[in-house]
Image (cartoon, rainbow, N blue to C red; front, side, top):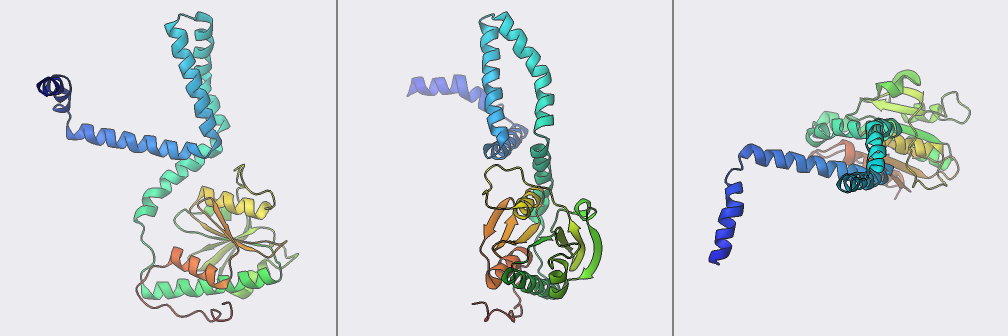
Length: 283
C-alpha cells in the first residue's frame, strides 16, 4: 500500500492538483463536441468517410515511422486537398448538422404554448388540420402539410404561392383537390395561417428509406431533417396518414392519434382543452 500511495503521489497527484476549474470546463466542452460529432456521423455516410480517413491517418503515421518516403509523400498531398473535397462532397450533411446546432439551444429552452387563449387557438387549428387530412385520406387525395415551429421556413415559402389565409379544413381540401394548380406542392402553416402553398421541399438523401414511399414522403423526411417542422403526409396511393418529425417517419394515423400527436408537440397547458367534435366518430 505504501508503494501504491507513493506512486499515486509522485505520478498522478502532482498532475491532478494543477487542474483548474477552467480545465474541467475545457474537458467537458471537448467531450460534448466529440459526442455530438459521433452522434452526427454514426448513422450517416460521413461515418464511413471518417473510418477511411482514420485508416489513411494510421498509414501516414506508419509511413513516417518507417521512413516510407513515397507513401508519405502521396498521403501528405492527399490531406492537403482532402478536407476541401470532404466539404464539397458532404455539403448537405454539414449544412443539416449546422442547422441542427442552431436549432438545439432554442428547442431546449423554448417552452410550449401555455397561455389558455393561445392553446385553444392552436387546438382549433389542429382540429381543422386533422379534419382535412382525414377527409383527404378517405378520398385518397395526396397532401403535404408543413407546420413551422422554431426554424423559419421563409426560403421554402418563396418557392410557392403566398396565401396568408386563416386555417380551415375547407381551404386545405381545396388546395390539394386533384388537378388543382397547387395540389402537387406543400402547404406551409405559420402562426395560425396558411402562409403558402405549392412549395417545393428538400428531398431526403437518406439511403434507408423504404422504396415503396414516393416523392411526397421523401420530401417530408427531407424537410424534417433540415428543420424542426412537423410534416404531415397523405398518401395518394393508399390514403395512409404519416408524420415526419426530426427525420423520423411515423405512419398509420387516424383522427384521434394525429390530433393527440399534434397537441403534444404544439401545446402544453394545465387548462382543459375543448373536446374534439370528431373524437367519438373516430374511435
